[in-house]
Length: 302
Image (cartoon, rainbow, N blue to C red):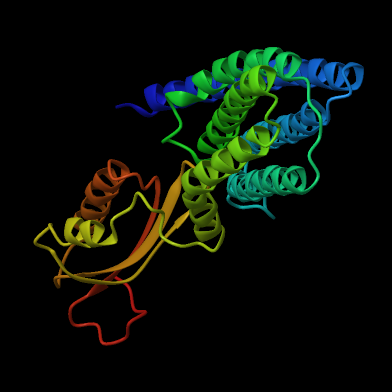
């Protein structure tokens, strides 16, 4: 695949991702306004609380979109890698916001168990039904690429969680309308909270790992070592470091111990071939240092 084709493909992916974020922001902002108006008009604390939660999701989508924009910034003398790392920081921030949002739902549910609030089940169910549609459509735009980037996965989980919450509110609203049992609302909220924590915990952990320059989860360092040792001229390797430059790009440095008396052209060919192979293993930026077998100083180079 040529560099021109890869650049065009990457630009198209970024355009599609930006479009998905904008659709999510517009749809959810509209729904937040509708929920606030309905909550005030019908004096529904449930709708007002959910509107505040959805507003935090809009902010998270905006943060991720802003991070993607920063990641496109060119490298400078001060930021030699550019601002790719901003996508990892945004992912970590969104993971924290997601867990805080879940915690707020749990806290509200506990408060309602202790201090029941009279709710209008029919109205809540209708408004929440719109929430299922809005969040379901928004999540759909992120579904295909959710495994390619932590920010996209975060956006998908935020929106999918909101759809689940809305579905739970619809069920609770219908049950309350027919039975008048008020504790159904907080009970379903607690179930939803448990499901969301289970599904989003890995996002939080991986975001934290990447922010600490751990080897990305989708990189198998043992396979990398095996690949580096495939050329007969490579006798050993050491000082391997792999880290994430962003939520989509990874970097690696390593020392290659080569057999003696290789020419500069042979060394360059080995490096080029290995870099090509590593690119297929999701490592886009590679730096090699080379040493000869006879070299006793670990920092001497060919």
